[in-house]
Amino acid sequence: MSSDPMTPKASLTRARMRTPRAAAIAGIVFSILLMTVVILLRLSVPIDPLEAGAWLDTNPNRVVFALNLVPFAGVAFLWFIGVLRDRLGTFEDRFFSTVFLGSGILFLGMLFVAAAVGGAVIMAHTAQPEAFTHSPTFALARALSYSVMSVYAVKVAGVFMITTSTIAVYTGIAARWIAYLGYALAVFLLFGGGYADWTFMVFPLWVLLMSGYILFDNLRRPAEAKA
Image 1: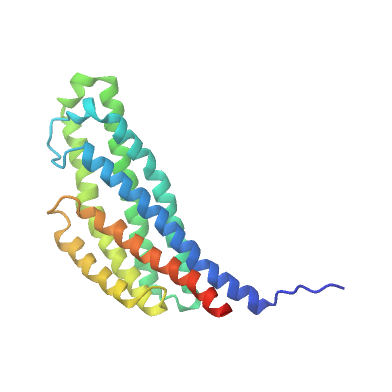
Image 2: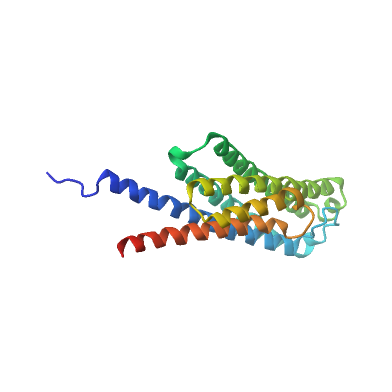
């Protein structure tokens, strides 16, 4: 009768090693995709929500490509949240876990809503190019998309950074200086996020930094254990 060479303790150890690695990979994918989306949109669409819509005649394909990346970024972000929650395990705090999950889902919902509104603007312009850009509907759609992302989603991203930084401090999945940097950047997003261009890039850049550290640390530890 053959026995499984892997003991329950070894299986648990391997699972704990894979969990932060999966979170790091998901976070890196999300960061790269979201930064690509933000760069393409910022280079194509004016920041002013009251602009006349000239970009619809010059850069619609680039905007469409950016909007098509949003669902993939959202899936990676949702995976990032799920794996980090799994990482907490028995150390999960109900308060921080609720805020962490809630802010993450809120951010994801706002991201999808803003992308859907942007896609609807392009579709409506394709149907009626001249009439749509001069209609109140276009102004409402642009203002709605701008408000959702530049006001509300930025604030929710700041809350998510605060809770994620707190989790990093409690669990040690990332260096403390990354968590403290997250606190500082979160305060900036909460109180100054709507006053500067490219501010939203702070969020995916910080997730990329944190995910890169987690991945590097996870890959380094098995090598040290074998040495």
